[in-house]
Length: 376
Image (cartoon, rainbow, N blue to C red; front, side, top):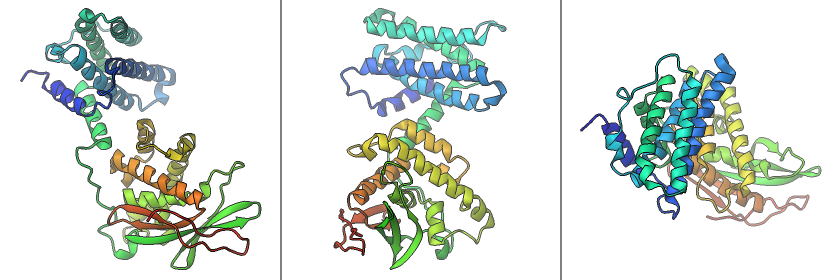
């Protein structure tokens, strides 16, 4: 096969992950995605010029943005200009501008070329598509060369990210503590009662396991109550679906003390703070979406933000689909805890299952319900 083999293989993979192809306005949506990603590519160059040495992530961001652009480009080509991918000049064969030409000019010309593709699509000028898409490809080579980014590497990185979110087969990664003594493992099966109690003018949540209180009494810590007092459920969801939760390890006293490096780097205070920060970031987005009620997915940008946030920690190896599952499942139980209020939650790390059950109603001295309803 010709030098474009990697591009054709990438195109075949993008067809499998095209969530837009059943839409009546498929081409228009692909075009919108193309111009959006082109804007992101140009924006990264702008940030580099603005921040200079204070923007060390420029190349990595360009790899991702160019990969995202390539996804929309090959999908659009496949739909409106079949056969063009085989004809495109591969990197190394494209004639690049002479040295000394301002980089910004190349980026602006790239944006303009993509804009012409959109103009042709909006006016149904199909006879121009092959030429216009070929021009956009040429300028993509210009800016990738300027950024020292291989288009093939960008495509491979995009494929890995896509498979992380939508794998052919969902198979959980192994639990991080499988090889540690049982006393240093996250509990494989655990029942936790979330009990709501009055605390002055506010409500607090108490966690109980085997008739023993653990953790701190939590309130919402905000003027407008939003249920955050139940947020430990998110840490339990991370433990179940990610096999990771420094917070739960601290609560259950299962830090991996037998390995001093793991104990300090993965189970220490910094990891606990990181997990709490992830919980807060996701919660801020969830509040805008009625805590994901009625939704079966989490937006890609939020998942990527979380993924970037945990870089350097063991959980960075967990694919995006597991994060999505942990978030959606955690919020499903969270909504039921809020409605209860409270209840009993069962963690089953072996089955990767988090369940909520209503207990028979009982009342504390303040007359507040300490149990809740739920699904078995």
